[in-house]
Image 1: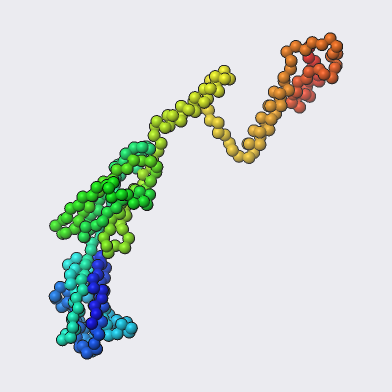
Image 2: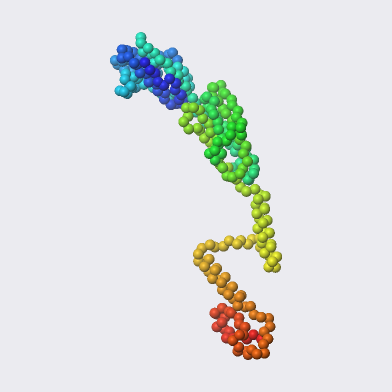
Length: 297
């Protein structure tokens, strides 16, 4: 006969299933025992017989598996952990091991959600109510932190449940997710607790950047004889209509200024007041309508 699996690990509250497959067809009674105590009896002729254990039952195996039966232990408890035996009365028996684990809770705690760049931040992780002793890991932005970078301590309660604590110190470089993960072998995906850390630039960096900006404006002010306006911002509207209007205005100003370049003194005895080479001043079209001629002396 064959009993499979030979060892099974489940989480408390889930079902445990074992299959007993007799190699001989000459059997009449199959008895299932948990730690030596009979919990279920199956008759080859009548099937599953009534049991005083409500969380125990059996299902007929598939046709391909032959004359087999699947033992089902529903809603497993820690006390169910032990040796499970399939006994063919007067024929053969096999024993398998059942392990029941406990999934607890996990929580990561940080000193602050907002820190400055370069600041040291301490995180704590608390995983309680686990059996057996859970494994614990730290992740920063989904990257595993080296085991040597954090400490772990544990304690066991009277109910044989474990609590694990850990501390992790990191230097803030950029905004990150800090995760603490706890797990036991029966848990397919580790239990995770996350902490969002937001990192801002340090006050020194802000002061340096502001100082550089003011220094640049001061140089311009000295060259032009003006003063620094600390409330001035070079940024303005960026919509296309504004940009086109601004560009046109600058061109008109440049044209106007360039045409105002008039010599301080013009002396020529051979030039008449109506000479074509006389100096001129360019004005806007509106101004030109009001002034007919300008003569340079």
